[in-house]
Length: 287
Image 1 (spheres, one colour):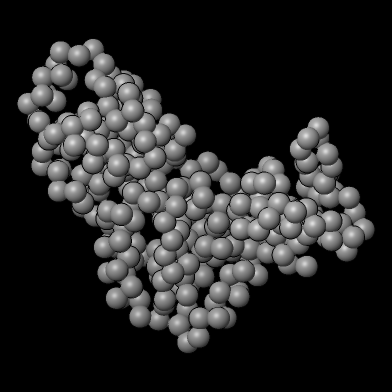
Image 2 (image 1 turned 90 degrees about the vertical axis):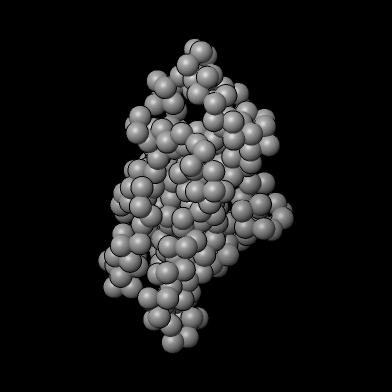
């Protein structure tokens, strides 16, 4: 029955049978079959047709609300029970964080928390949040603004300064354009990302104009280095690529992106997670 319930929860989260199938890595017909089996098991109509699409019925919505936290807790229990003598902490991290300061920080924490085993995954922030809600991950290290959700605990880590990486690392060209151009064209992370949503207003006030939006801050920085234009990237990315000294720190002008720790309320109060949180706060990079 567990896989059948997961299929309904995936449909609720992703909106379509095809998207739910991609999330669970099964065929669309498998999703439909599993939900049908769940309806037979419960004797309830859980989905209904809306034109060419399907949506959860009122009974389906009620069932998902009640079942989701239980399934999340069960998944966490299974992970912990399968990890032998050590306690496993499943961690989801934003790609730019894990590719810069996050990996070193987690390596240092792992050396100190010998009673724990880390399982680490890199995703965009919305995917990390989704997998925490579903019980696949216990903790998230996320970039950008996190919308309030009643079942989650969000703790702010710090505001990471944003840097302007000059095209071909030509610092003089960047300074000249900042003085002469009304709007400075920049390469940025794509606009649907959590990071850009938290940056957008302040970036506009600093007269930064996105002209090329890509899916990775590292890609944006590499494009700048190659000469495609100036790039707006987090401090950690500029430091990881060793171009921070040739770039402009816009954190001094208030342009930063928030970084946060995220977990479910039921996970947050566990001793092993509280210990992990303490180590994270002690191991944050210096701004």
